[in-house]
Image 1 (cartoon, one colour):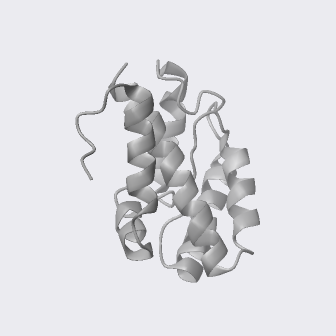
Image 2: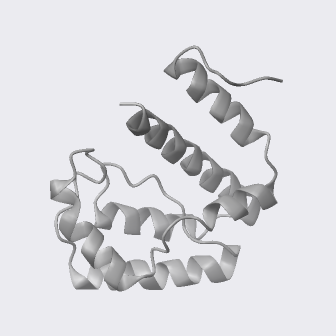
Image 3: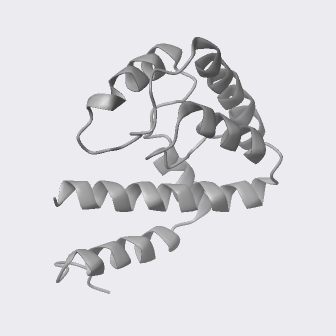
Length: 136
């Protein structure tokens, strides 16, 4: 099936979603490896400190997160990775560090199959946002 060129953004987003959900779990896990690990405390601190300046609005609800919150995210991601075998994937746009921590904690109780589907859905949202930004 030919996907390119797409006639417009809507078609591109639909095609990207169709291609994403045609992938298998191993494909999804491989894609997850291309995200920064939430457990990188230094990276997270820099990321949250700079979000106010991001014109894209990504993570616009985040001010400088408390060190305790960042440490809890780091520990939560370690537990998540131990349980599921990949990093915590969340579409962070508009979410505070505290919201992401709450999501991480709640998702730790999911079954592996349930969590894989949630992570794939989150990655799909991230991809759509990035495609839209790329074409703005």
